[in-house]
Length: 203
Image (cartoon, rainbow, N blue to C red; front, side, top):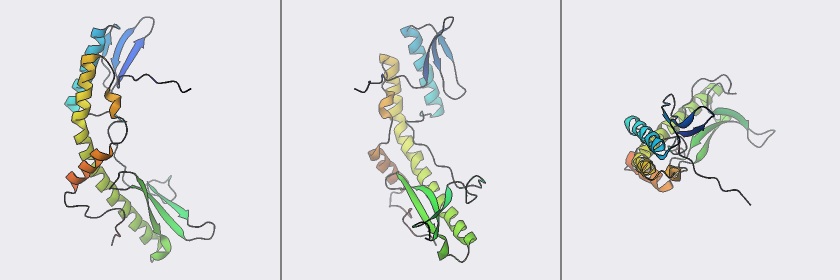
């Protein structure tokens, strides 16, 4: 039987050391401490955390959708570019392909852009096209992510305030991906539909 995990307050650490007891807010380099393991101390810690959230338009990782990193020079990658790698289709004798990590804009789910090197005049042209295709996808995806997180923010603040009132964890309820919210964000960014997508062929 799987043991049920008790929800915890996000960005709040309960400290029960021999000489130090209390609640500490931990958000990046913001780490104020409230002494004592009392309901009053916990409430103050939660309010302090919430003030940081609201002042900085901050949503914790795991709740907020994270942006993708664009393709930049990266010598640790086989292609020399972040997010791009060389693969062989139908190994071992198939054509060389540049695989690009991307996102399906309609769903927000992982997707791969494949560029067949032999269809271009040179390896350099194929790689240039792959970088352009992936970075276009990243730009579009990140725009939708910004809209998604903006729609999510008031929901997160509402639950964070409820925690400070009830002293019961509930912000964790927003963890995961909200497909309906993603569709709303997509319509906000592209009200007339996608101008182009990962499925569209780039010129």
